[in-house]
Amino acid sequence: MRSIRRVVVAGLVGGAMTLTAACGGGGGGNGGGGGGSAAKADLGAGAAASRPAEAPTSTAPKVSKAAVSIEPKAGSVDVAPNAIKVGATGGKLTTVKVSDKTGKEVSGTISADGSSWTPTAALAVGTAYQVSAMAADADGAVATADSNFTTLTPTALAKASDNVDNDATYGVGMIVSVEFSKDVKNKDDVAKGITFETSNGTAVKGHWFGDRRLDFRPEQYWVPGTKVVVHYRLKSVEITPGVYGGDRDEPFTIGRSQISTVDAAAHKMTVARGDGQNSEIDITSGSEDHPTWNGTMVVMSKEGTVRMQSSTLPGMTGAPYDLQVPHSMRLTTSGTYVHGNWWAKNSIFGGDNVSHGCVGLKDVEGGGDSTSMGKFYDSSVVGDVVIVKNSVKKETLDPSNGLSGWNLPWSSW
Image (cartoon, rainbow, N blue to C red; front, side, top):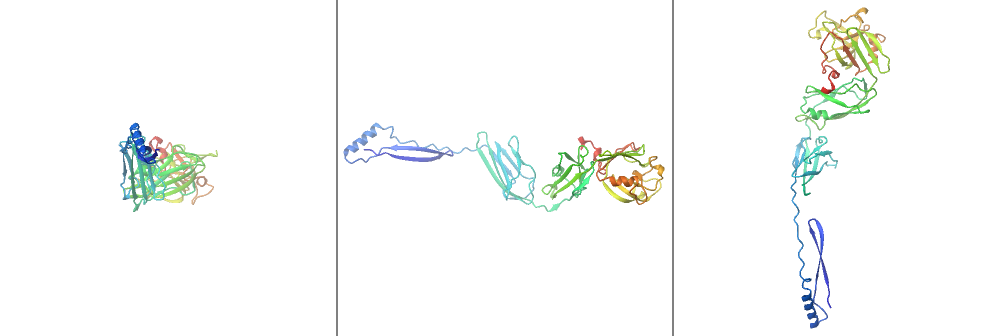
């Protein structure tokens, strides 16, 4: 009588669990030589079956042809927020995970060819990050890499100030002008760090005037009633080497439409309002010696009574003056205003151009609420449009003079 013993051997081959079974005859019957003879007969008859089983073949893990690179290297400190680079050679990136110590992941995109990963935005300053990346070669063999580093804490900041007040209401020609306290070297990164959220999907684009000024406007005048939020995300943006900005949000609203067109040759200004209540006002504009700029301007500020002196104007000719000018609204940085005029004769308005470049409307000394200029001043807001045409001055106003970016075609903006 035979007993059969089964042995199950478990082996892990190439990452998979393989089960093998081995059967062997054993001695040990009920004693006596008969048992031994039977055992020998069984061995002779079943020689093939009793041959030792072959040992499992061991397959070494495949070495991936892909290689993953991560910069900065593990343990790096004072890393610039835009310095992270993840790449792959000999294969394609399949997974990239970048997260801070709280587990918050950084969004990013793997390139179409799988050779690199780019974060959606710069990393935060003063933050520790962990990076894990995986790539696979053409055979599917995987390579991985890890890193950890800490971004720098800024020691120098650049202030970004603008012409917008929180929750204020502006005219349809409003241009948001941002001034930086230091020259900006990384203009593309800075422009991307200032975005506009609009209630009706209006797209806004920025344009640089020099190294410190960035103006924003839509392609056409704003639609009345549009709600806008300016998002500043410059805390982790390097404005100039070693200098960073700050984060904040600024909401404002576009009010009713008011577009005024000055015809310098006719000495008239037509005021077109969105509610259809249009009007025509007699004016006086710049003389032949001091003509008003042609072009589209925007009310930059309502300044009330302003002292205006001929001594402040370079190249000023004619009789000197020193006047307290009521209801003054600035149109250009260089000093063009639309304002009240109480010193000229009544016949001048609608009949002649005698100013030193400004647009004057009839007013009284100290300013009157019921005068032409008083009414116009009260109906106006910062951001209103004032267009001048038919002035004897041939040149068009420079787009950087005041909020005059509407004089620049959208294709060049």
